[in-house]
Amino acid sequence: MSTAAEPRTRAATGHLLAYGTGSLGMGVWVTVPGLLLLYFLTNTLGVPPLLAGFTLLVPKVIDAVVHPMLGTLSDREARRVGHRRGLMRVGLLLALALVAMFTVPSGLEGWTAALWVGLFYVVGNLLFACFQVPYLTTPSDLRVGYHERTRVFMVRMLVLTVGLLVAGVVAPAMVKSGERLAYTEMAVALGVLMVASGVVALRGVRRLTETCGFRSPDAEQHSTRADVRLAWQDRDFRLLVISYLLTGTTTHLVLAAVPFYAAYVLDSEGLTAVLMGAFLGPAVVAGPLWLKVSRAVGKQRGLLVAQAMFVAGCAALLVAHQAGTAVTVAVVVVLGLAFAGLQLLAFSMVPDAVAAAEERGTSRAGAYTGVWTATEAVGTAIGPYVYSAVLAIGGFVSATDGDLLPQTGRALDAVLLGFTVVPVVLMAAAFAVQRRCRLDVGPPPA
Image (cartoon, rainbow, N blue to C red; front, side, top):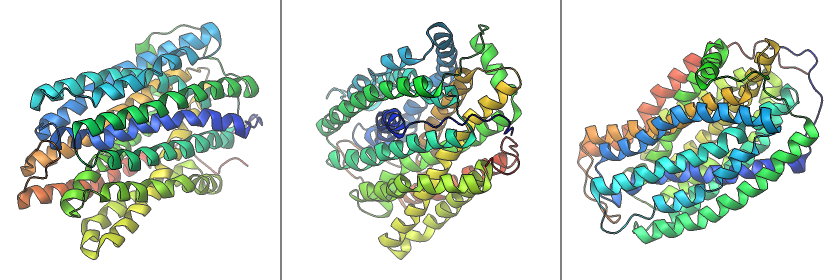
């Protein structure tokens, strides 16, 4: 980690808040499908668990190809016009896809309903990528130093967590009846928020690049394949990506499992909103704490601490429900604190990797971000798919219109083990990979 000639530019707080506002809409798209789509498919549309998981997986596999392509396109736009905001404007149409995805015609059930949802999930993910890839490249574009990059991401993660919290609490409350119309009304309300936050974010990105400077990609044009190859050959970035793939798989598995855990282990669907509040509420205030940890011990060590906390929390949930709801909620709070560190520290290491690459003579921030967001997209799909597979193995029975059908003891065991033991294994693997990353070697810069 080089500290030579670190830029001292400090971004204005108002510009950072405007930029971070875009994460409200991103938080809605990350949370609502991740939290509700598997449950919507299995308990409202009558889709079998394995097919429901497959419906969520395929669109994200497509993302794995699309995101690097958009990263390359974003770099080309930056070379041509000096910014990346054109693709972001296309991404504002994402709200329409959210509404369409949750507005399934009444005659569709089972596989036909899964096809409808899957189609608009593909469209939505493409539009989300148009906004997300250039948006997340912004901290890498800015001519700022090591700690200032973390500060930019800290503000962004703070606003993102607010978006996750709003969506994670409001969305389940709006659809607790399990009826199709309730899902449509929820999507319309949150879609308006997505558009408004995206418009503000566009202004914030423009202000930041005007005041902090814009780190343009190298002048040479490259193919998507060459960009991906360059990013993947960066050993430390590769390890960071693999670790985050396992981390994202774990956290999105937990997210998808929350409604099932609340309904079938805690015997209360209404506790879904409570658990999401306990998970995301602490994360709103934890960002500055993790920033202090980063300044004290570095991002790498801080990230390892967050991963270890998440492993311990998931292990505790295996038995926490036997001690009562209050104990369960307390453990979920710990998971929320860990989640804030997982997000902030991993994301803030991406522009560090880009800065290190620039010192080696290459600067393709869009390419690195495209690989990163593709990894994130795949993790958001693999997590729910793994959980759906566990439910299928346990013999979980799907329902329609929100009815809770009786489940066998084996199916209930699957609901619990998929929410606890499986995340422990996945996050432990992420910890093992992250330990090998040397991007953040030595004491953090002053």
